[in-house]
Image 1 (cartoon, rainbow, N blue to C red):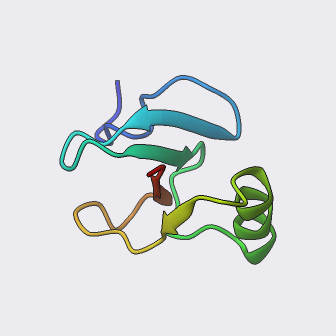
Image 2 (image 1 turned 120 degrees about the horizontal axis):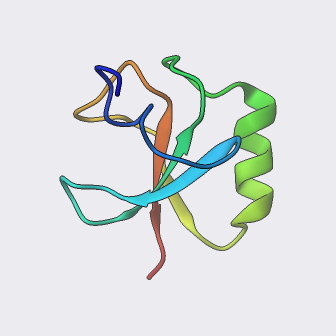
Length: 71
C-alpha cells in the first residue's frame, strides 16, 4: 500500500476505474507522475475517438489521469 490511492490500482500502462469524486470513467497512468506525455495523450485519443476527454485534474494533481464522458 502506498500513499497514493491511484498507484494502488492494478493494471498495465493505463488503469481503468471509476472516479470516486464524480463517478466518471477514469484512465490512470501506471506511473506516479503529474502529466501524460503528448504521445500518451494521442494514444488515448485514438483509443476513444468519439469520447470527450477531460484532461484537467481537479482533485489529484500529482498523478496523471483523465476522465471520459461517454454520453
